Image 1: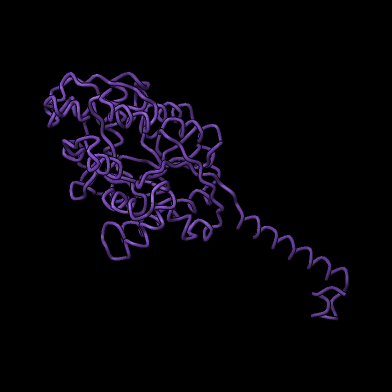
Image 2 (image 1 turned 90 degrees about the vertical axis):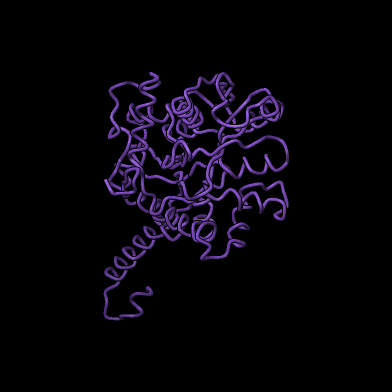
Length: 347
């Protein structure tokens, strides 16, 4: 006698078995949903803290997602990984490579993660000690100097171009592929200048390895630094999964902002969580100041600044790094999150 029939002895055996099979099938479906495995691309930056928080606090699991993190050292390889299916979702800057892949129908931007805020200490403009000692003490003196980028069309390249435009200067771009290589080149004076998030810039400056000479927000006050993106297939065919991912990520961002920016929650606990992913080779006592000083507000609800993305696209088209006929609608799926302009008003 089955468990179901035991509970109801009048039920025929065949019906009891059918009911049991149905319940087993439904239970299996729930288990499969609870164990949906996805891979998320990230950098070991505090700007990716929403992902780390969502993993550690179980927000992804609450949404039925089992997340495996895959770490990268630059934006474009991450975009390629999403397009190829090696990574399901990722957070990084909008680059020429990302736009080209979107134009081919491979990926879609579905949200925003980090934006420059004039009221929050953000990305820094930094220079080598050699350049600083030679008189490079503010951005207006960058004319003719070398500027580190990962690849052409990267966020570092975009920031440099805006400095050129606003200061009336010309930079010599030096592609070095990886953040670690750029840091090494700055320390040894092989490159003059760069822009980078504060959790990297401040510790280097405090150690005497480089100098900070300006803020990116002075030139790009509402710059959409990083975007959230996925494959076009996920955006179109896996809407429930994609919304679940974004919901968990937004919860992670809210917790991060509460602790590190608004101070309505414990910064100490948040620093300990982030330290599991950043500066892991250092004791927390040494890593904590860098993590705290590098805090930047993450976009509430993953909102997306369309004005900033349009400016970035226009620059890439002007520089002939992407096709001139690409539209922002080819790149962005606006159905998932709130979109705003530079003033913060909804579009």
